[in-house]
Length: 140
Ligand code: ATP
Ligand code: MG
Image (cartoon, rainbow, N blue to C red):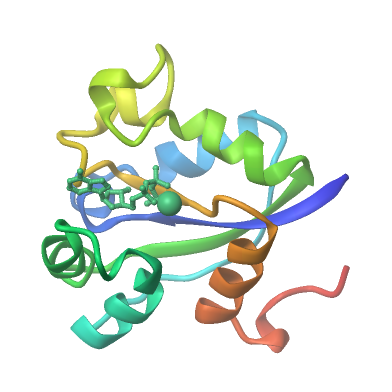
């Protein structure tokens, strides 16, 4: 099924000049970039994005990290896009990520792991709408 999903180059990825590398890997995997921007979240906006994790012990640190610098959210489209983006990213913990994945190659820790990808259709829908208005996304 053709899906859309949200990915983000996180503050560490932007700081390490990896915007192009992340986009290149998604494009090389056959995913199409249909929307993309650079923004900086404030603390409340980062809390809203990661609200599902609000009870987790790492939440405050994650929110501080995600609001620490500019990020590059993008909407990617393709066959099974949600799962494929997560395959290209690799596991959350770079020590457990497979060879050739973004996180294996570039992430410095389980928190500072370069890239985000929606984990299912409902989260993809919420997360795309969090960053992009209807006018900024091409109709399907
Ligand atoms: P993402 O949602 O960013 O794509 P993910 O789905 O692989 O990553 P989640 O479990 O949703 O992982 O965690 C969201 C983010 O919270 C992680 O990407 C990471 O930045 C941070 N995180 C997750 N687990 C930990 C942890 N144990 N310690 C510190 N930070 C963590
Ligand atoms: Mg997640």
